[in-house]
Image 1 (cartoon, rainbow, N blue to C red):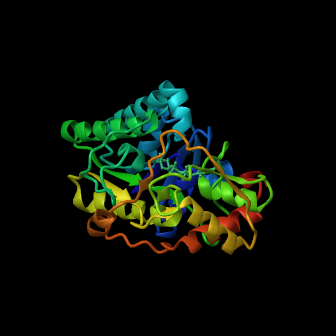
Image 2 (cartoon, protein in one colour; image 1 turned 90 degrees about the vertical axis):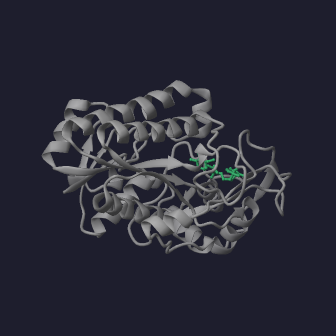
Length: 329
Ligand code: UFG
């Protein structure tokens, strides 16, 4: 039995590939390297191809006797999705429809899907529960929600079993292997703060200081990438042992930190007095996003190992400090 990881050369995909391999799984990765990095995956495991190449994908599914797909391949920039929504409908929704067709043809019935907290839009309560309203405020969240719904219909029609994992703010890096976050452009808070610590940016812009939070800056639920990875491994196991599953599960720690608190912690971890300046709000940012992680704990038996912010930031710092230009070094 093999797990096929789509988008396995990306940030969360590559960490999940390592986690699966470290737990004895046979893994094959497909990635078109549009945003992923060849160096993030062992050469022998990687097929450089697009998931829309149905013929080749069906061959790979057969050749490796794939029983479960873990599907990361997607575009994931909120701002870009507002500028160019059709790219997101094409690369996220249409490409996933093709992947599912190949799975139906090859009789592969299990899929773990990379979803997002962006499906909730502006939350109606904190912590956010999986049954809360889903009203995305951007095409990125909208396309991820469309895929979750597509998976439900495919469960009814073709018996495809799925677990959609709704990530909150992924951060951190593997604690011993040379792998970490490397996006171009970088838009996420923690790498930006650490780039400022390295002197690669003059300062960090804090987007908004007038939110209804204790220090006026936005609050997010930062989850370590290896805790995300272990949740994917548990989801693969659940699909194999339970079958007949079609569900969505939040992945966050259930604790929020403000932008100000993240910068403070990064100053402590790095020993650098990272310069920061207030800037105006970024359009579409909710004030607070914190997950209820109860379902992940109950259903998957998931236990985060790296839940404290200091560990999240110090593993990220170790990566950025030793690889200031990411995978280019
Ligand atoms: N922020 C800054 N300055 C920066 C970058 C970010 O103040 O230079 C703030 C943002 O305004 C936000 C917080 O830091 O309040 C976190 O921002 P990120 O861009 O790191 O992450 P988001 O919360 O915007 O995005 C995350 C995921 C997305 C997902 C979204 C759901 O990365 O994939 O949550 O809303 F869509």
